[in-house]
Length: 460
Image (cartoon, rainbow, N blue to C red):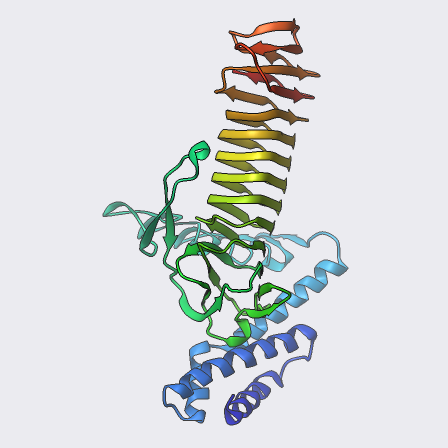
């Protein structure tokens, strides 16, 4: 780093921050600003600017730092009040209604504002939700997500162009041919690294507050690409190799400065090791990955999307958020555990599978293999394509609906406080209101079990 740039940034920040209290949050904000401004000035220096002008330009590009300081101080004061006082302060006067001095809610003749208009605003200019990102209605028209309705009719905002790749067929038992879509990132590529696959037996990947896509590539290199809204090396991933493991860990994430991160990790098609990947408060995508031994994915407060994946063992644990799986094959074990969120599957094969949602529904089509599908509080509704062993489906508080494609199977259906329905062509051993068992077809081999504590059980 250029020492003069560092000194100039520190001096200018000191002059700005000297009028504000030296709290922990203000100190952390100053450190984030220093790192970001130095990185921006260093880029300017590479373009031929003098150190003085490079720093001046970096500050000008950033905008009003004092406004940001005021916002941080306000948030800190609000947090302290929330910790020291229960509930909220409500004022009702002739002028209108305010909650917490108008910070949470303000209703008067000018309109209605929630979270100072950041969450919801309705005034003379129109109506907006999440500052217009989710919904906006004004004189220009209506915007809902990426749909726009105006004088031109109905249109959609176009994201980046798409690059298509075809995922090769699985084996004869799990035959599919599906296009894999790889989205070109809209943020600037700020960090790209390559690692030889030789000697790597396991990948260990960790990110937070980011969209992470794991995709296949040809050649003999593992490729890391990071796209960010800020070009600051402090935010780049930290990588290391040791004990046959390549580790990719997200760099520092700022607490106060807004940062968008999208990461691509390209895995060679000939890589046959294991992968452990975690993502918190973000989106995780695995597309077109095959040939690996074991994949263990952990998702906290985010969503997971798994498409065209063929491995020996696949384990997915999601703390909160939905999980979607399509065209998945696990030759040995398949585990999918979601604590709070829904599960949706399509064309999934696991020799031994465990699919479990603590609070959320499990829905899907073309499930094959053997194992259990359990929802503690939610509906279980799946179609069974092929049996390689027994399958059980349970719900503690919700319905169980199973649609069978196999022609030969035993079944055992029961509900503690609900009705039970069996196939019309079934040969019954027991047939009561809440319990039915028997078989379908000649010479059945495997058993289908359906159980509900408070809900209906239906087998079609």
